Amino acid sequence: MILCAALLGLLLPGHAGAEIHIGLAVPLSGRLAAQGLAMQEALAAAVREVNAAGGVLGEPLVLDVEDDGCARASAEGAARALVARAPLLVIGHPCSSAATAAASVYAAARVLFIAVGPRHPDVTQTNATAPILRLAGRDDRQGDAAARWLVAHAPGRRVAIVQDRTAYARVIADRTAAVLKDAPVELATVFPIVAGKQSYAETIARVGEMHADALFFAGYPDEAAVMLAGLAAAGLSLPVLGSDALATEEFALVAAKSKIDVQVLLPAEPLPVQHGADVSGARARGAFEIWLQAVTATGSTNGEAIAKKVRDPMLDIDTPSLGRLRFDPAGDLAADAFVTSSARAGAWLVDRRP
Image (cartoon, rainbow, N blue to C red):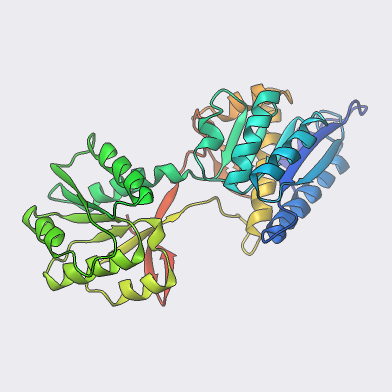
């Protein structure tokens, strides 16, 4: 994909001065090496296009690549190696453990870092004042998505939240309940259950007694399957939304056979504009295009100024690779972090329903 004329417009003619170093940190070894290689190839191609058009503000770009190994220790080492070359931008670290470790290194050096893929909240949350942007959703926003779904599916304003007491489920359920406190619901009740049981008849009876319009289940597939069977046996036909841990092939088969209308949350990520384009490569290019547009908007390559500009929630960034993007004041992508999906033929497919 060739960078569009609007982006190349910032490539002003002039005599090359100091080189502008762009860093890329991705897994080039291990199980995610193919993803890292795709990101490297895409970004290298984009840099070549920019240099062929005259560079950025008259200066050529140099791409520095480090293998972060998709691991905390190696990612920190990769980040330090890149920082030593004084980059104006670092892209990458798609693994959350790697990104959280590397982010503190970039924050201390005040280097602009655009994280591509990691969903752990700490990437931006623990570095709130640093020039860090995240091109991905956040896992801690699953409860927000669940609350919106419950409000949309509860005409009687009565909702039930069932969680299986695991640490994973409690965090999501607590966030869902907290968001619902300020939502237009009459009653939102949380029902903790004990994992591993063969029946949840008592909980199902209480859901029926409260006349719940919709139910959110935060937990794992085995317990969710038992819950679905119990709801159907009790004659309760309320719609059910499941947390992302339920997005397995096995549970898709269970849900498809159930009399209950079941949806499951899936992590949402920016998708390529070009049909058939490599997703990882398109996201790496998209991060680079965000930077190019911010350089145009600010007339500067200063990372602090660019991060401030991109974090303006009123600013729409139209990238050739990923389309329109917007970021919030924390540096996170201002888009739904999770979307609903329905079971079809043993798979979970994104649903266009509310």
